[in-house]
Length: 144
Image 1 (tube, rainbow, N blue to C red):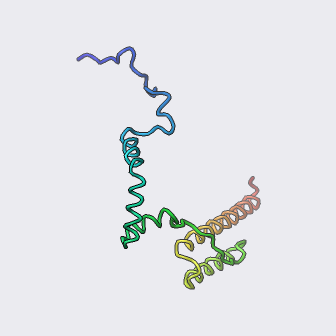
Image 2 (cartoon, rainbow, N blue to C red; image 1 turned 30 degrees about the vertical axis):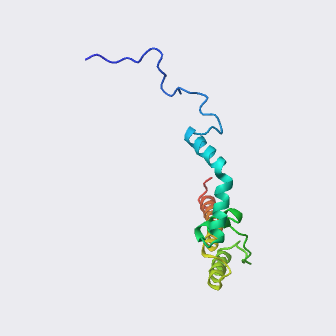
Image 3 (spheres, one colour; image 1 turned 90 degrees about the vertical axis):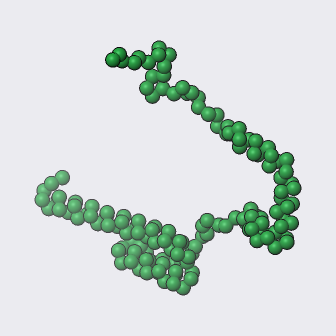
């Protein structure tokens, strides 16, 4: 059985056949064709959707409203949290977040994000405490 050899002009391993790659902003031919079709009928399509929405078509109305005022992904929240410089403060902050959800002042998703931030603070405090303990043990044992 003979071993197959690569042709002399074959690409080397890790070498691209198109080093410049696809130009930025380049679009697929099918996408360009669809966009061209949409541009020719955009006015008529828009008018038809508006007419359908005015006639009570809730799907058409939702399409229009989603374009006019898309749903907000996040909103600023204001919750007075206790100082999170101590473990007790972090615990109190988590309790405050829980109460805010129970009262309806915070949405559950917002509370989860805020609780995650407070949890990161707790982890930072824990790391600082462990670092202090290790340093104390090392100095006690004459290390370092």
